[in-house]
Image (cartoon, rainbow, N blue to C red; front, side, top):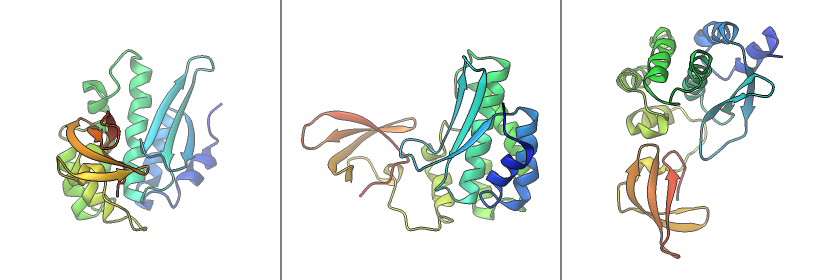
Length: 201
């Protein structure tokens, strides 16, 4: 069973720009799903899951996102839900998803929805969307200007060879691999892949 009509609207109100609300509710009606607002997750901004047992679709978006990032993440996950409907075997962020995401974002790329600096970064980003906004430093920097709370720098913002602290451990950033960075734990000398969007000290 999917969300009631008013429930999805209630969950989105005050979390996305008001000018995008009707459009986002319409996207839900076209391909319904369970919608959950999740606590902050360091590894991802949102998520789409399909449960083959119950045949149910679930979209989650982190609660700590500013309205513009919440909107982009919501549409990103709705694109996954729609691609899954047409073909379950497609790559999660392959050409079909990129095309779907671009098409769903297009009606939102206007100054009534996004501020000018985000609009410019988004227009560039949408030419070849990444698996995560965190993998696009220009877009992330534009979005972070609208965060209501003080944020630490993200791993994406640090240059290679930088040392940083994450989860009370010291690392060195060695190499970028799509949405993660290969990092060296300076204590045990082991290498780890850490998401680029995590905040670091």
